[in-house]
Length: 108
Image (cartoon, rainbow, N blue to C red; front, side, top):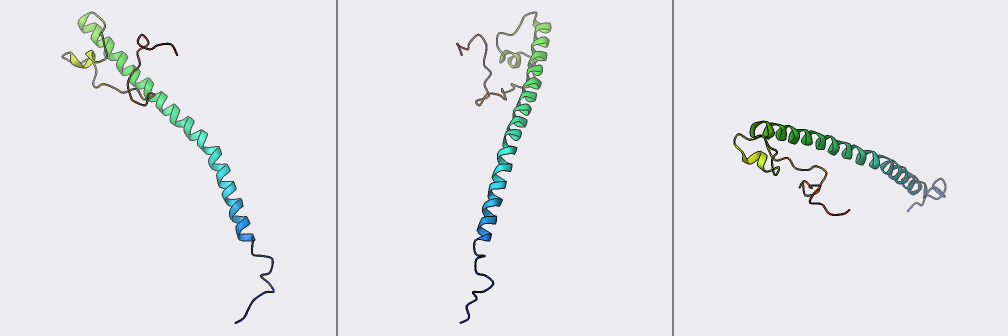
């Protein structure tokens, strides 16, 4: 049995130190990128909200032109024949997808 003591003596911790430095650098990079990804996701949801709002606005405009009044609810845009809107869009900013009416909401 041969034991090697000469050249390897004192070098046993370098791999562990290099691994710790690599993990630290990776953690810093991830911490820097996550807010950017979160902000991009927020901008995407806002852009989708604007698109859906414009769809509802067009549906309300069409409804008013056909019936001479405003709809009493968003659901009425779908229930009339012919429909004034293609489908009931969900709110991309709300977790449950339900639209919040400014009249029905309480104090914040």
